[in-house]
Image (tube, rainbow, N blue to C red; front, side, top):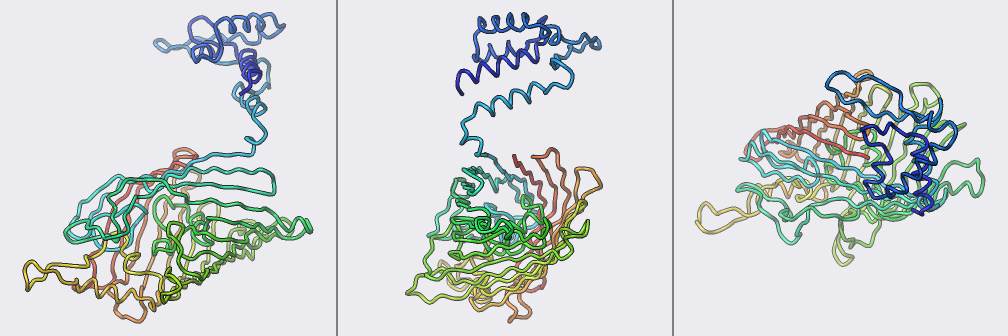
Length: 494
């Protein structure tokens, strides 16, 4: 900051809030302690303030008597009734002294943490990223986890353009081989590495392009780079509890981000939003996977709000999502179609939100993505030949179920209720998933239940206590054991 800016802030602070100097330290003393100004400069400023008509009298503290044993509070009194607070004046002065480009820049963070206690452990998808509890036989396992640590850098060089850079935390891995997590389970990667950072978002958005042609045309924004997928972040905002659990298709390995180009925006009539859309072409794998396939993946979501003009029904909507792509293999290798579709009926208002979702997919899960949390081992000891290893028949069965031609189908219900005007909400999610409709009964059919209570301690701090459960629908020797856990989740969003 320029020297003149520093002196302006110090002068304003001293003129507007000169507390009593009979014991408690005032703002000037603290500035001296921090080395911002010298004691000589402070004395000179005080003399100037005392010599200014009306300032010394206005700055004098209001006498008060403190209860016995309680130190009197130091109160900064405005120079005159209705005058802005010291904090407001200082912030305004700081803002005025900043370079122009810095006024278009914002910095924020988002952190998800949790403590999880597993009543029972089994095979299945990760409950959250970076969490890979051991498989069956490890009931009582518990852990502290860090599942997100965003640093958001957003720069708006003008009204026309927005640039965002967001790194996020991830577990360092070695993709060359599987790693055993217990005597009964493995994961498809080595998860023994540290938490590191990688790029989650990095894009340029050109805003309101049709305004260049006619200001009355609908809003159209163009986004290029590594960005959100059309469904997952939008649905996370609808649900409101991403720090607790994953939304349905994200739980089944559809990524929340990828590289590509997209057109997006709301459709408004007389200032009322009746629809919004997100239509893009992406690489088709994920943001954290190198791309090998030569085909790109069209993906899109359209949401309509037919009753938007009626008070209280602005957010009653119907949404449709579609993506079409291919497995991530090189052109000289045969690929397979990956298709996803979701239809949602949803409502949100002052006291809560509710959504029903129907999903249908083709080739949504491979063995590694379905068992991203814990998986049965591929090789096991041969019971007939001690010292020899054979392919695990359970691994072979599950791998055949999760084949490229598998048609999956799911039904989901999720939402929350705000407890009147208190900062407390009750939330929940139910997900039923059939990985392969051609197999009945399918040992991998499951229900997922999540329910809990959330407390918004501050505008930037939330905590939730919840139960998360993955329950397989059938019974038998080839059906995995269910996973049941109790979580305490924390969100910092500042």
